[in-house]
Length: 158
Image (tube, rainbow, N blue to C red; front, side, top):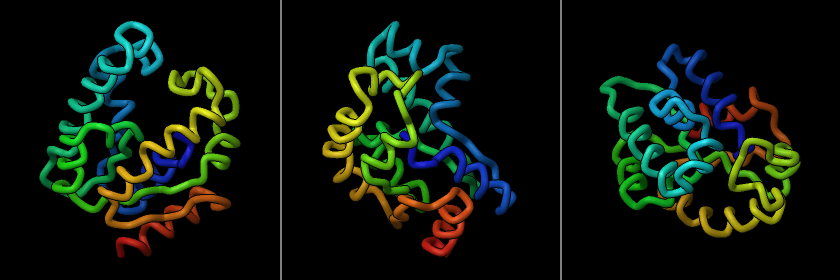
């Protein structure tokens, strides 16, 4: 959350002329509910199941594409295996402080409801090793604008 996956993913897809998919948007389209509504109605397990299905669908294509993967997808070992098999994975890495500044109060983000800064620090502690496990390349996004991040991604996978 807040690393710039959607913005940078859209930029890269447009520059490369490739299709673009966002796993959160795919979940919302498939379920007819927002991420916040899914969390409210079925809790995190319900959302994670929908997220895994959306990720599988997004990565099922034969040709090249850009997929912005929701940050929590790495919590599922099957999703990590799928990511490793499906192409080049780029981790847009940011310090929790950067993410907190970008996300503000975390409106519409259920995992941040108890306080964004503390929640992001906890999420970082759990997820950082999982992101490192699946990443083929890492781009540090702190202090960069989306165009700079897109250029760094192109250079990292170039």
